[in-house]
Image: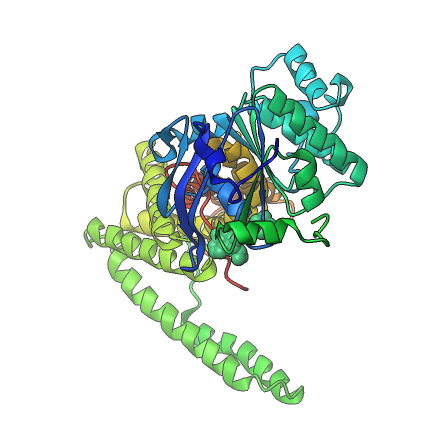
Amino acid sequence: MLAIMGLDPRANHEPALLDFDTVSFVGLDGATILEGVTLGILEGQVSVVAGPSGAGKSTLLRLGNRLEVPTAGAVRFRGEDLGLSDPRVLRRNVGMVFQKPIPFAGTVRSNLKVADPVANESELGNVLQRVGLDSSFLDRVADVLSGGEAQRMCIARTLLTKPAVILMDEPTSALDPKNRLGIEALARELANEGIGVVWVTHDLDQAHRIADRIHVLVDGRNATASETSLYLAQDTPEVGT
Amino acid sequence: MNATTIGWAGLVGSFALVAIAIALSFWQRLHLTRSIVWASARAAVQLLLVGIALRLVLDSKASVWWAWLWVIVMIGFAGFTIRGRAKEVPGIFVLGTLSMATVVVVSLSVIFGFHVFPVEGRTIVPLAGMMIGNSMTACVLVGRRIVGELSDKRDEVEARLALGLSWQDASRPYVRSALRTALVPQIESTKAVGLVFLPGAMTGLVLAGVDAVDAVTVQLAIMYLVLGSVATSVTVIGLGLTRRVFTPDHRLRLIVRASH
Ligand SMILES: Nc1ncnc2c1ncn2[C@@H]1O[C@H](COP(=O)(O)OP(=O)(O)OP(=O)(O)O)[C@@H](O)[C@H]1O
Ligand SMILES: [Mg+2]
């Protein structure tokens, strides 16, 4: 069953793992980027956050990983305000995967060890297997991986922190269609393992393929019911970026 | 010691060289005559004033406190100079001044603690000046470099933070590379010294009539001192600046880069 938030407000009543509660965010230049956004991320589900470019989707994810702090409202993980917890612990519970793969200098092994310095070879091999790579990648130099391999490695790196929620900001926008489907399938597997997956996209076909729920943002706020149906009914969805 | 001075006549004589520069400017229509005259006159006035003041400070009968006051003023000027050359670096004036002060305290404690030189105005002022001058350049370099690295590698730094690393761990590879960049030229020039160029202190001593081997020992002591000072100041700037670029709750601040 696909719940489309804004169309069916009642679907939001289960207790959320990660909860954005009337969150506002004002940028350094004084511009309001988010205004009173409310949405909940449930465990074991793929929650898609969709909306036009500049709607504030990336900013919302950055608030979830505490790379930004809300100007008003609260973000809560398992009911606890993010402002009250150690950001280093929180960020391992609420992991983040960025739009472009960001390999660090060195091998895949050294990349993974940034996330977990004490991981042993079998743990490293297992996490690579989970993202569809294998342990032969461990000694490869990370910056020369293909886009799809690099993004998988970045997901593996985040998985090593054993997150309960994983925030993915347009994780397939830099990938070809085949790799795009591969990462989508991976997101589904992670949700099946119980992780709350947040997936930002403005590819509506993709949103419909993977979402358990879709939240639409416009102009930094929750879309109204009519805006949501209008946005989702576009027959020429922006694909890719 | 048979000290060499050039006297006022010598100074006027050396001004003939400025006349050559002026003549060249006329001949090639460089329109630099005014600049050349102004620069030479300004240098003469500035240095003479400094010389007169130094004579008072360095006078063996003068209290050594005048020398320390002189050092404090030098530290302040160094702070301003660093800020002028690294405007895009946040808080560089305070950090620069602080690191110059650290360098002076640490190095002079070592020098005077081990009785390398006697504690006199005549040693305090030039030694402090030498260390501040060299450290200043390195501080500008490392400050700009750290801000440059952390803003160029912003994505990587945030990806590290996002994995739960502290700001210290997230920034370490980039800060380390900036520190190396600032220190390596100093180490290289220490290696090449004597083979490629004769350093300033030694040149000055030899010109003033000091025995070459005596000049070398003084120069060596100074070079080690400079190397230590540069390393100290660069580290102070590196640690202080990195702390400022992050918030206490491990977020990377937006760093505004001034256009050059
Ligand atoms: N730190 C910031 N300071 C000021 N403005 C910002 C900041 N970060 C983002 N913005 C602005 O906030 C708005 C929302 O940006 P955001 O990146 O969150 O949108 P988005 O929905 O992810 O867009 P896209 O689909 O293009 O990625 C944009 O207008 C952007 O220019
Ligand atoms: Mg975005």
